[in-house]
Image (cartoon, rainbow, N blue to C red):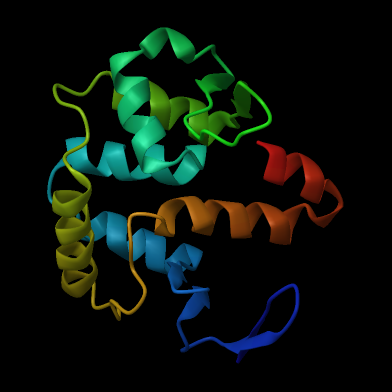
Length: 160
């Protein structure tokens, strides 16, 4: 069986990489979430996935919860060469729920290194191939899902 991607066909048993970053299929995300032992970490994983926000921005959001405005997140630009001083990330109901749960957590996300170790451990526990898994995998996965679902909204997706 093959999965239709926007530019090519991918066998269902092959992993999907965007550059060197792993893109998860919905079934792989379910397995991964089931393999995460603590609800607090499930909430953190889902916040990263369903918001599509960068890891460092999600850590920043925990320290600045007022940036979460119901159905969006107002994020200042952390890039020196950025044209815009801030951006708004619109959230669907899954994103809103996951960010609410994340902001209720007792602790912020761990360091990049610890989070990557966790992701790899959970992927192995879920029986997933760990090739290409990185802290960017959740963001790139969400972006890929949106592009596949809403190809007419590409510019808006990439701006957000």
